[in-house]
Image (cartoon, rainbow, N blue to C red; front, side, top):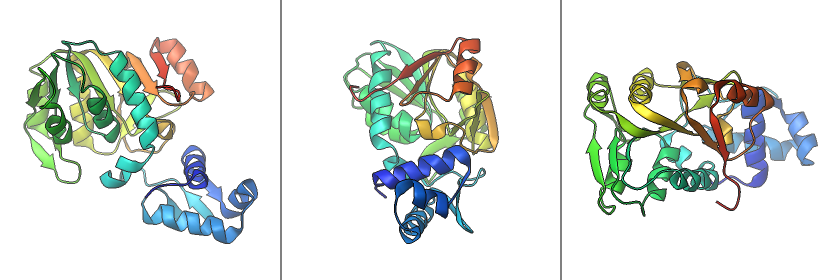
Length: 256
């Protein structure tokens, strides 16, 4: 689903506040209630939010949005983030790249780098990067998750623990206002925990829709992150957390 500007703003609002009424949305956008209900129905059909009586609420905290939908959500923002991340990765670097549509955009943005050594549990990343100049790709073993070609499980974790790399390129589903990092799948979270533990630098990549989004499983905290790459200014409370943790912040603007 390609979102128009109103639908994108509506989705941002719901994800930020958790619930918004049809009446408030119609007033804000100066459109009819029928138009807002149609937007909510389309977004709900795409599993981006939930229809509730009189309005819309954030998507479930126990289930992520479908992979093919996430591929087109905030695609330009993810691409800008990815290009900015690529500027901070030198040639001849070693790295982990985990699951996620934003990390896949980072993989695309690294196409002109040389001498990379990449360890990944993301088969989409592996297929993409194996053709890059002098780029060695090592694929983690484990159980493949069909919906996004992600590799997860105990074998994946044990494999990752054999390495220590320069950079982790880490995607996430949720960053809470207190800096808590969350995701939906416990097995995926445990894999990401191992990646953080075995990386010298952790680059977290997350567009603004991840701020305050509900997700069930705790992964870690921003204090474990070297740098956060995003596309919009952070909420004030999260900015204070970064100041305390010393995590670097990079915001991709339209020029990236």
